Image 1 (tube, rainbow, N blue to C red):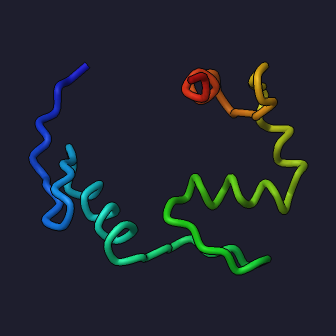
Image 2: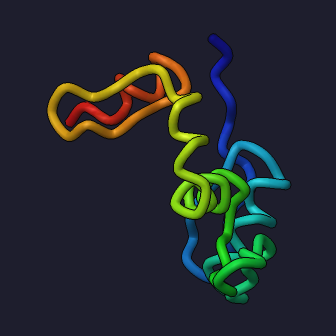
Length: 89
């Protein structure tokens, strides 16, 4: 695993990032309020594609069936084991 130097720093909150595009996303969402992913069904907006996709599963419950890994504690469903493991506190 490579060690990245955190060389991109936010000038508003001083958080640091490994990549410039991650800093730009942070600036757009956290400091400019840009939410580029919009639900056409209910009008809600989301900062990331992942949050948008997770939201869309509420409108299309059949998509939950593609999430094969189920948390034994809270019944949340995940597409892969890595996401399931990251759910565990």
